[in-house]
Image (cartoon, rainbow, N blue to C red):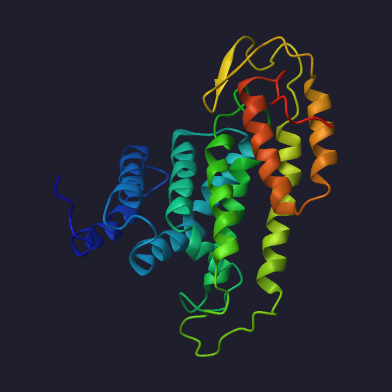
Length: 271
C-alpha cells in the first residue's frame, strides 16, 4: 500500500481543521475522523509533525474545542460532535504524548498570546473533562473509558520526557526545577479523585451487566463473593503506599475491570 509522504499531507491538515465547525455536524465528523486517521496511520503518526499537526490542533482546541466541552459538561449531554471531539482528543494524546509531557509547563510561545505550556494544560483539562463526565460508564455515558489509554501513555511519557530541552529559548531549564513535576502531580491527583468516583458501583437497578465476561483475555466468573465496595476500599488502602501516578494506574485497572463486571477482581489482589 502506498502511503503519501508527509509533505503531501500537510497542506490538507489546515483545510481539515477549518472544517471542524461544531455548528456543522456533517463536515465536523468526517474532518475529525480523517485527522484521527492521519495521526494514527499515516507518515505523520508516532509524534511527527508537531508544528504542522500537533500545535495547530492545540490552538484549535483552545479556541473552539473548549466551547464544545463546556457545553457538554453544562448540558450533561454528549452530542455526536462532542463524542467525535473526545475521540480526536484521544488520538492527539496518543500521537503527541511525548510533546505534551515535555511541554506541560513550557514558556516557549506558539503564538504571541499562547505558550506551549498553556496549550498543553488546556488539552489536559479538556480530556480530563471527558474522563470525569457525570454518571456511570455504560449507564450514563460512553466516553470516559475512551480516554483511559491516554493517561497510561502520558504517564510513560512523563517518565521519559527531557525537561531540559526548552527549544527556541536558548536557556535550558535546570533539571532541579520542580515546576513540571509539580504540574504532573497536580494532574494525577485530580485524575485519582475522578477515578475514585467513577469506579463506584451504580445503584440498582442500573448496575453493570451480570454473567461471565472477558477482560484482557481472562474469563471472569460472575459468582465472586468479593464485593465491589470492598474492592474499592481495598485498592484505596493498598495504593496509599505508592506515588499518585501508580495510584492512578491501579484505579484505571480497577475501573476497567469493574466496567466489565462489578463483582470480580483478580484473585491475587487481596488486602
